[in-house]
Structure formats: C-alpha cells, structure tokens
Image 1: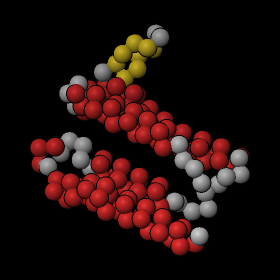
Image 2 (image 1 turned 120 degrees about the vertical axis):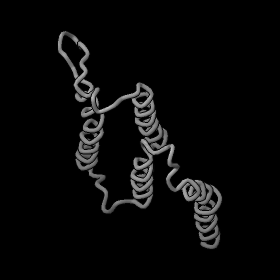
Image 3 (image 1 turned 90 degrees about the vertical axis):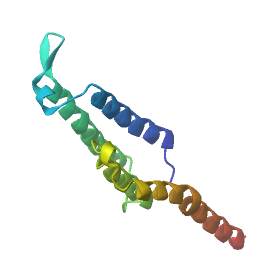
Length: 134
C-alpha cells in the first residue's frame, strides 16, 4: 500500500491556507450575501464557502469510485486515515477560539507525543520485528 503524502499535504495545506485567508478578511455571517461578479454571474460569499466544503466531499466520492473501478477498494479504514480524520476534526474545533486557547497544553503535548513517542515507537517496533524475521 503506497500513499501520495505530498498530494495529501497539498490538499490539507490548501484548505488551511484558504481558511486562514478567509478569516483574515474579517468574515462574519453578515458577509454571506455579499456577491462578486464572476463571468457575468453574481456569486455570493456563501456560494464560495459552500463550494469550498462540498468540493472535497465530491472529490472524496470520486476517489472512492475511481478506486473501485481500479479494483483497489479499501477493505477497512486504515489507521492512518483515522489519524488524519481525528486530527482534522480536532483542529476544526479550534477555528475562532484562539483567544481562549482551548486545550492548548494538551495539544502541544499531543504534537510532541506524535513526534517523540508514537511515530518513533511504531518505526522501532516494526524495524525490530522485520529484523527478527530475517
């Protein structure tokens, strides 16, 4: 099983960058009805926002269909997919809460745990197991 982690990183970075730029505009719910002329059609901020969350949903379904067509369906949700999903959900809860610094210490400890314990521990366990198999 191989994964294009750079493509995943680019996808997540595109979403984070977009959210950061949207927040930097000072966006409020009152801005949803604001429109921009796009090729002679008025497109509202809400239209852009709805597209920004439905496009990845649609791409996800296309990925599932393409994997099925290529006969590489996933028989289960890989653990690494669960990590990404859980982290994205936790990160999404931080939007708009910077001043409160919710779970700040726990988040920092989690980041350190991934880097200093979980990943090295998994790597070491698998390396040791593979070495023993030789």
